[in-house]
Length: 343
Image 1: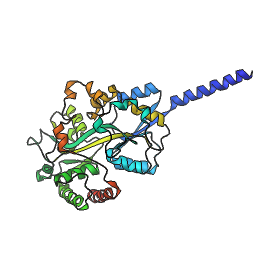
Image 2: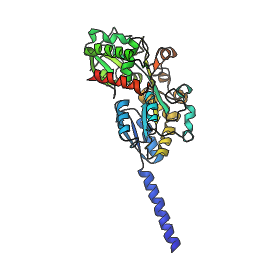
Image 3: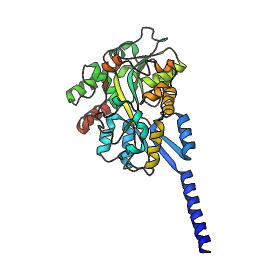
């Protein structure tokens, strides 16, 4: 009888664990439209879990919420490179166990060991991209080639800017011949003054789906992320993407696991899953952004593999500059002028 009862208890325990596994939820926090739905569904089916995908509009709002929650509430959070060091320093990120992410062996070496996380202790690359110019060639047959073109008075109330402090200031700093990673307040203030001069031309700020204002006809010229430019071109072939002559703003977004995640093992599985070649290819297919591995690109059709909007040339990359962490003191200066600009 005791053996029978023990068997029932064991069966009940196993059954409870199975139900718990089936009910497990992976809480993901990222920009909207940022993860391939095909891959998310495959992961749910493979692991018998639910992916709860919450969205934010920019790095600042993501950081503010994670800081408020003290690193809890989410299992995988996506963050741009220049936020990684800050979040790690403040205890918001868990250290990654690379042994649980064997597929990271396929990551592009150039994306690993960057200044924001030299040992990839807290982050691994998801996608990389370019902030450049877009315009509707049907409405503006003359086109644009430089950041400076956005200041032309003929574009009054036609310009869209990305709703991102470092992108916008990066543009203005490049315009003035400065590094997008400057810590010099005089240079940042000069960029701010240039942006004030642009205000009459600015129609809106958008970072949720920045190709939509162009496709809908709301905006005709302005800033754009290259992947969103590609997405817009699918519906609107006359939407052009330009690498500005002054130099583009280059960026990289990363997987991270918050320190308060309740499902760290599952989060590692998710990152490893997303590094599979088929999922890396799906990132490009679905989002139009360059993924982090060569294996994914090898599976793409030629029209995507050789698309220079998605995959910039070496020359375009060399003419741009990656956004890096500027430290808390300099970031406070950027934020001060950003608030003045937006208010």
